[in-house]
Every structure is written in structure tokens, then in C-alpha cells.
Image (cartoon, rainbow, N blue to C red; front, side, top):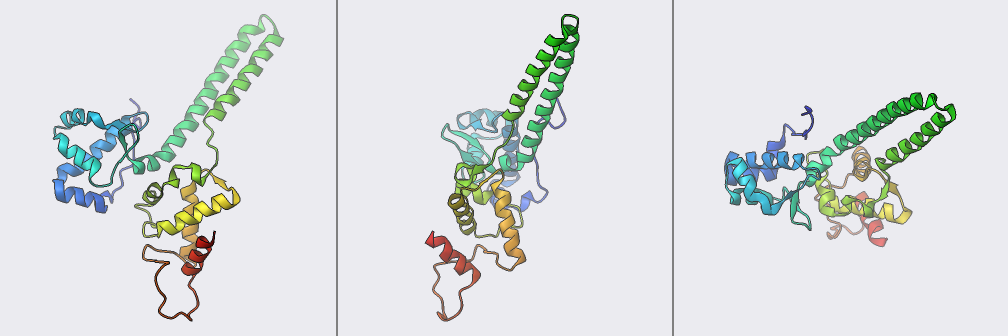
Length: 253
């Protein structure tokens, strides 16, 4: 087994997460351990998902009760269920993206090296027959390499076609970062409207949103979670704030 075969990041400050604090308060350290064991199980799956109906098997494996595992999965907003009744962790998949992309690049490079070996072997074998045939084989293999590389290429997409078009998934992508105090509804609408109005496509929409948040922080324009665009103004003659102007722009689209 490769040393990084089932790697996933475990942040040193995970114990400070409010959801995990609630787990530990209600289920003790056993609940905390169940959470991370579930992440290990999900990491071992090819699609990072596990059938909810088989939770009883996990209970036997972990030496705990089925109700406790179901409680960790269902009661603390730590996992999601898809239409096929499989549970998974959006946060885990998000933080695994660099590893997944690295693996795809490594696989592509390995395929290319393997094809080059085959090219050389085929060329040497065919050389005794005909140099022209050897060149033809190499050309065909070169086209196959391009097709295989294109299969792992990540293409930019519209925001509405990404997984972050779900406001909940969008918000959870910032947990544990310096932007977790942002008004996610505001920045979600900002990114979505920008993509829709100009047909803008990106590979990493979270990076785009973070850039906007960083710029707003640097210019004292950051919209935090406490901002309420519908709140009544005490002084109606006072000039509109940046946040209020942005909210008006958003509502006019």
C-alpha cells in the first residue's frame, strides 16, 4: 500500500469547530472519534461516499452502536446524503481537491511515460520490417496520448453548473478559513450574478470568491455575517454604505 493511498487532511484546530464541540458535548470523545473514523471510511471509497443502509456494518467494525453513528451523520450538519441514500462529506471532498488534481496529473504523466515505452518498443520491433511503419505507429500513439491527456483536463464552467451553486455547499467551503465570518448570501449572489451576466467561467469558483473577499478586506469593504440589507436606516440623509450600495446593485439585476 502506498503511504498516501488513503490520505486526507486533518486540521490541528478541528476540535474548535462548533459542530464538533456539540458532538463531543453530547456523545463524548466517542462521538469525536466516530466522526473521524467515518471520514477515514469515506476516504477509502472511490467516490468518497458510503451507503447509509450499511451503517450497521460500520457499527460492528468500530465497536460502537448504530444509533450513535447515525446521530453523528444526521444530527450535526457534518455530512450530506445524496439521492441514492449515500452519505458523504462536502468539506472532505473540497479539501481533497488539490490531492485529486495532483493524482490526475500524476496518472496522466504515468500514462504518457508508459506509452512512450510502448512507442520505443514498437519502433524497435517494426524497424526491422519497415521504418515507415514504425513512424506510423508512433504517430498513432501520439494521438492516443493527446486523447488520454484531454480526459483528465479540468475545464472552466459557469458558476450555476458547479457544485457551489448550492448556497450550503458554497458556505461550507469557507469554514476554517479567514473568510468564515463573511455574509455568504451576499458573496454567493455576487459571484452568481457576475457569472450569469457575463457568461464567465472558472475552474475554481471558491478561489474567485476568496479573491473578492480579500480585496474587500483590504479596502474596508468586507461584508460580514451581521450585514442586513433590509434593516431600516436611522438617518435617511446619511450616504449609503458600500454594503448597501452593493445590495442595491444586486437587487436591481
